[in-house]
View 1 (tube, rainbow, N blue to C red):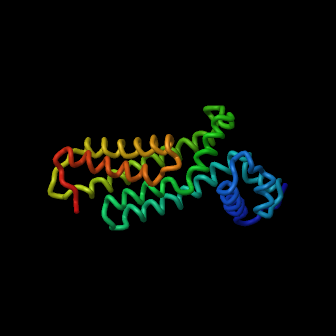
View 2 (cartoon, rainbow, N blue to C red):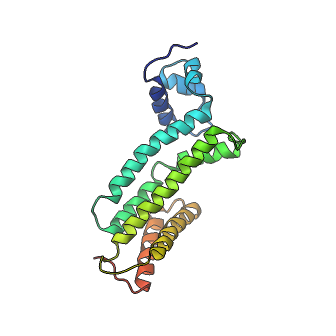
View 3 (tube, helix red, strand yellow):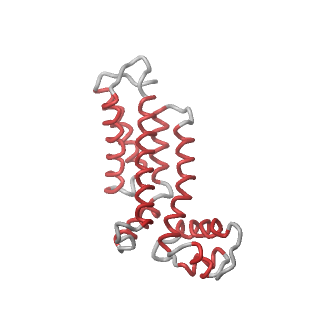
Length: 202
């Protein structure tokens, strides 16, 4: 049995995160992760079942840092429209490779069994992402509207879903035009708010 080294699990995850950030999921294997971490392959399997387990844990670790940055953007205090722009721009930075790797895992059948604990873990992470994005964008949109104006929560919900839905759709169709897509979404949201007769905060 491999010798248990203190904090070796975190060392493996840091190494895996670096590799998954620079290579595709298919290009990274357990031997490469072991070499990057400076441990044996046996040590890797002492802590993780397989590559997909390492990926999910590394994804969760990087997600915490990702949410920290989004939180800082949300609470930065700059104008809400500018904040929404910064928030959407950040969603595109450094996330495409990870999301693509997740898609590959599903398509290749790594999580073929519905009872697989890693599949459940990944689904929980996706639910966490969706929930956090909806809450954050709704909070920013509310700040675009003067406090003395009453606005239905249903409208905020619709605007939030419109912002996220339009953004994801545009990025899928025009992945090379991220900045233009962001500007289109923020302009559309402003226009929708104004069409309801509600002024925007200046």
